Length: 135
Image: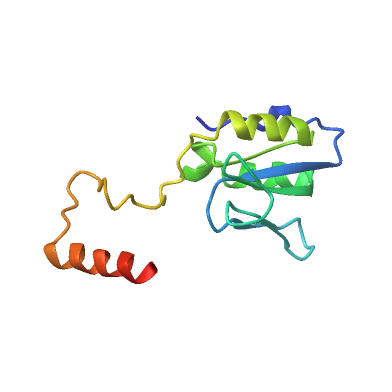
């Protein structure tokens, strides 16, 4: 499912990175003897979110290409949870198209627990108390 970054034009100076990880991720690239370059790809816990993807603008295209090449074996890269395009309107459109993509740490619906998760009587009572206290 991981997309190749061929949509990034080689001549583009910067890209917008879309990251579905809730906490974002620090991307690091070492270029020869130069100090490591670090850029935070904002996750879906930031204020600039489209389709559940946090958007980080003005990331150098060559930096992101080097980072994605170095990290292409990571599951979240392969699943398409982080990617970049050079045009912000294209990023927004793709992010909306991919809005249903899950990151794996979504909130649980207490009224519809996942298979295999059993709610105890004690936890039901505690949840009911919290709901009463909220009102």
